Image (tube, rainbow, N blue to C red; front, top):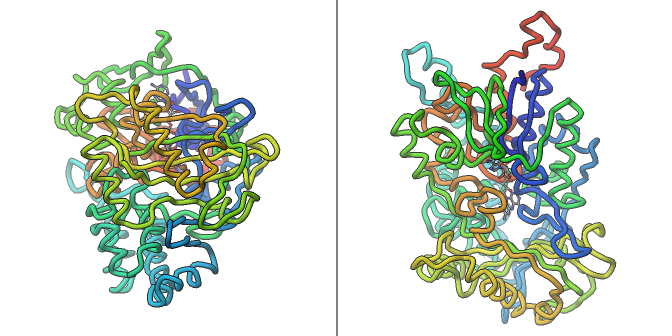
Length: 546
Ligand SMILES: Cc1cc2nc3c(=O)[nH]c(=O)nc-3n(C[C@H](O)[C@H](O)[C@H](O)COP(=O)(O)OP(=O)(O)OC[C@H]3O[C@@H](n4cnc5c(N)ncnc54)[C@H](O)[C@@H]3O)c2cc1C
């Protein structure tokens, strides 16, 4: 019998399978789609044009995971963007944000803001450093039972408290701000000019169906800066071959350890016997047994669709049904005959701004309006669009002289008002997104040769992302750290013995990080010893500390 079944071959499922197999467990990964990788995949969306069809840029992928899985040895190469961001600002010109550039750019709008940039980054970095230290740790978990059961968790909480105490008072204040305030209030406290607040505030609405002035949105901003590219903290980059290059390298790493991957194999049900998970039944009716079952799915999807509700405590089920999902994200990929020619910075030959994250959202107020529109009307009439043109960095994605662009658009309502369906509004909203870019680069609409459109409903249907939630659950204080996915279950174990969660709905949350998969494997290995070890084999050699 196999030791572990992983439901879902997203990147976290693959990472978890890797660590389990490396420790000597016999593992099978079951993926519903024809390809593994979940939301981190590269596909041909128009003849001759390939792109990262959902997740599109890399930073959060944990360096330890990259190293342990030898992703570089399995073909992964990540390059930095020449410039972090470019914001076309209409009559106000543009703002470029990038290493060594930002201060002089910001000074054109405010000398005072330019002078404050270093202090801002120092404060943000110290908070991000703490987050970096925590991503590969299991959060302190609230446990039932006597002091003996609670002791390890108390120690963990104590260690965490110690770490926080070592921060200076000023850093602790900053941390409090970042965990509780809105991004808008936080940025207003630092800067006075709109463009730099927009450039930084954009991170707070990424995948977060909220205004930048919604309390708690500052954390979402922080969540997007704890990564790095090739050792450069906070940078974002491009995986050559697209995000699928990451997950294909992961697939090679797990297969090299003997993990079986089955694609086109949806799981319909988790099998239970005497209150324990014992295997799964696939949509085709095949029964597969295992000592443990690990889910890479949004926890709401797992517990409301694949597990017998009668086997779950009532309060747990009620909370899972109410798990907050929905990102406000609309995703497009477009094939382009030529590069966009921006009115504020003309030119159709590749320049550094074409290789950056191009953010169409000139101010926090614009973003707030976008949210208000989407709440009341279903989608923002003046949406926020981030455009990346990865073919400027990677010739493998488009025919020579032509390009592919990712359009990552907010805000749209996960569910449209008055019972309207995304199936009837997808094309109309896609046109709006194209027109939004066209207003700043008037050759854009006519350069579009083909387009792929994913509304929140399409993201749910294609990738199993409930409400199109790109993080498997909102990154609010109520759904983070010891509360992800619920107080008492932050240790990757659910209420059913032998059933674990390893996806983005667990700590540290969404993004292509590999961290939930890594952490879940460590917890599973505490419960499940490789059988060869039980027979006196030498599994220790394959079981380094995680
Ligand atoms: C549009 C979009 C843009 C994003 N942009 C970025 C970005 O640029 N950078 C970044 O770091 N992050 C980004 N993210 C977030 C990131 O992609 C996700 O947080 C991450 O991919 C989640 O990984 P995961 O392995 O936890 O789950 P997933 O990638 O969701 O994988 C879960 C897997 O389970 C499979 N599955 C579902 N149901 C079943 C079933 N019943 N049986 C078997 N298999 C099943 C799914 O098909 C999927 O393959 C983006 C996400 C989206 C959707």
